[in-house]
Image (cartoon, rainbow over all chains, first blue to last red; front, top):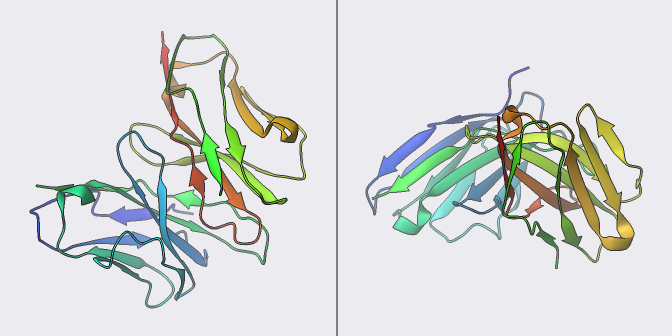
Length: 116
Length: 115
């Protein structure tokens, strides 16, 4: 059983460019999450999907951020018109939600973004 | 509002010492989950434990043990006989019962174990 995989692992981009990160969750996991982590801080929740439905997106940092999970499997996180403040690690995670109770969330290795 | 506080920013110990990482949380929920994750330099968050608010029994897993006390809203993590491979950033996190989705993380404690 492979873990959560993210691509690319590192991305350097110029300010104003768009970037897209891909996440492949653990197979059979129905929930997929995106978090952002800046240096010296804990991860910060951005959004999550249950299957293909995006159930929470109010914590996306701005309208430049968007996420999709079109077939309920992999997901993409896009940042448009990147700014230097977007430099961070973007973490993807997945879990198997089994109706109501808390579930264990497994994280990938993250995608580092540097905006220059 | 939910909040997790890890007051210890950095801890340095010598191999074989025991070390305790503190975690204090705030929540108005009566049912909730607490987690510990380890983040080695590679960046991946490694799940260590999940504990629900109804289960205050302490847990031991090898050299790791966890002490959950609702009376003091604490969920502390102890590593016994620390090893160099334990060097990492450790995060405590909190989530509500209903959704179990958005984890609220503390700022983490960086543990350095020297030989």
